Image (cartoon, rainbow, N blue to C red; front, side, top):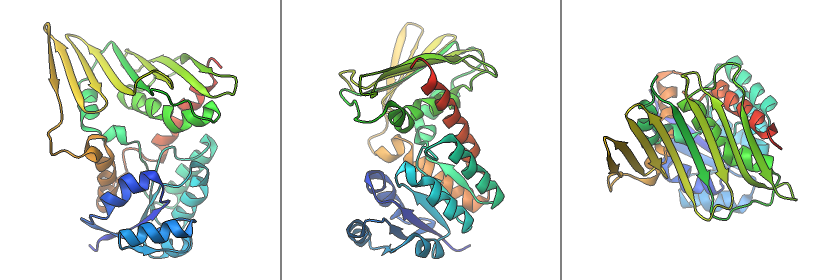
Length: 308
């Protein structure tokens, strides 16, 4: 089998920090080129990585087998739908689309055209989160997920902030423990006079019987991401995806990643990218396909309407 030809669409911060550095390593794939509507950016970055700078989306789709989409959320629907219609497998940054209706249409398109569609919820592939999830069982009583920022109240409507950032909590919560069918979602959303997000918190009863809590404060005085899993005989805690704590038997054990482990692996980006490529090679469905991403976006819609 020939190597998969990958195209990069959108050359912003995430593409520069994650996708271009990793994909340019070219293991069982080739990075065929990139596209951005901003000419100087595509010429500069594609030149830096010695890949082809495509002048338009159509040309890129003609010379690739799969694409990574890291453009603005508003552009996802148009770009992803065009790629699927051209018979390309697609990995898109979260969220899948600007609205749940658009996300649903994209999920349906991927099925109609028989193409892979994966959404990059990287936390599902972060090694310490995977380990913590595997420790949840019928005895789990509580799961708490927090993602706080020291001083980052964005100058945008709270819905945009939640769609861009709070969606990480919603997806990780679903992955750890799916809401029970018919479960009432509780919570509140606090905004300022400009409708900018200050604080959001939600809770629900999960299918396994435990209670799940989500919290985010945009001006908490500290940058902190934490997951706690309270189960029979142990409290498991993951801090910032790089510290794993287990409290059991009156003792606390703390583990950190090996020095050689990269940040991209630690935060789940490496695992997510490789999972997508492996799903193409093995002709399997990505774990976070369009339908799965749509469920998360619908849950987020519910949360955004609660308490505000």
